Length: 391
Image (cartoon, rainbow, N blue to C red; front, side, top):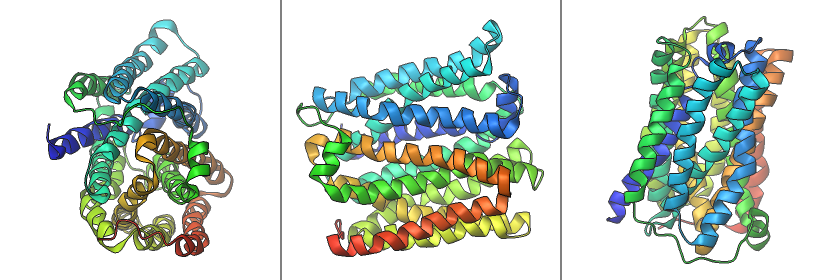
């Protein structure tokens, strides 16, 4: 399989993973209610959070095992197969066995633990491709963006058919991934000694830079998946379908612009897209939460998507720039751990702040964090001279 075809196929795996994940978001309050929860905000928060807690715990074992074996494809296929099972069990077992919501959360943790293998290692396989890191990570970014852009409105429409329908569709998507991924050429480097993200950070301290931005960027994603969804649902009275379409106003430009912005970062370096883009991105997040009307908030979502597309592929490409080729699985696992912790914090902290102080305060806190990180890390970017990728 050619490099271009491999890039497209692997991007398809990343797309499918995000599509299945985001299917659940537009009507998350209806889903947790059907699963036996008694409160919308708290239950939604924990249902989303437990998946990303599992991501944090299990991203490293998947990456370490893949690097040690010198193979990726069998692990991606296994993660997809078990992911299909996890989503199906969530749809079936609570009703059949009368599970408590705590048991439902345990099933959700299993699903997250296996899905992260397919997601993280398919991105690692894109890192393994020869050629432009910006283009490879731009392809990953387009896949992430398109998965979320299409998953949100499709999920909103599926909820109209029933609260469990998105779970069944997500399971089917992972069945397709498991069937297709064995046809992708495995370009993993030869097996090496086992390592860990902490060892990688000690060896290459500059990896902390993309890890920090991965944390902050995914924090905002977690924030929008819960607080943003409930904000549009409660403040503006949108249905799950309309909420999905509103979320797509962010995800569509985020998806479509990632590849060209990835190419741009190859030419101008990583600092401007990451640091400058993040500062503007934080301001746009604040804008969504403070404008008075629905149309203005939706326009803010478009702006958030454009700025997110500007910075995201450069951040991913910086991981590839800095990681040792034979330890890319662990390096990407570290990035995904940072991102998953960020998503978790965005869900839990965002939900708690919104519950205690209101939606406006929550948007100010999350956007302000992104701006603060950009300002705080600019000296480090200058000191390290992180302009990798410049042609």
